[in-house]
Length: 97
Figure 1 (tube, rainbow, N blue to C red):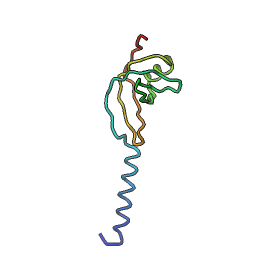
Figure 2: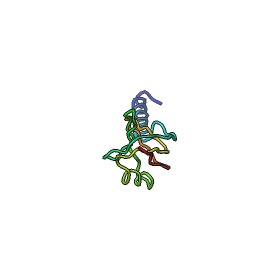
Figure 3: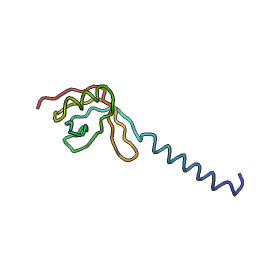
Figure 4: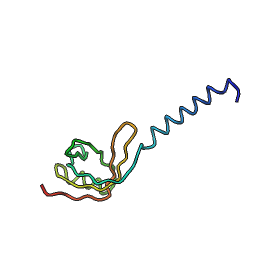
């Protein structure tokens, strides 16, 4: 590679890395989380952690029918590059107060 092409190649690699980091979740793992569904369709734990609820059938049912209720959710959590946590609900159960 000639010297004049080297800066172009470096820029191209850096651009690809930035795009990859922006698109691919940092991590994804299955968890069980207990908390309450708030008015903006988030799962909030007693420790104050927030999870955005992904759009799927069980997630939609959870946030549409159980606002203000304590729930236990089994699902897959993805942490985005900006730190946002998104839970894709597999199953859930409403807990007694």
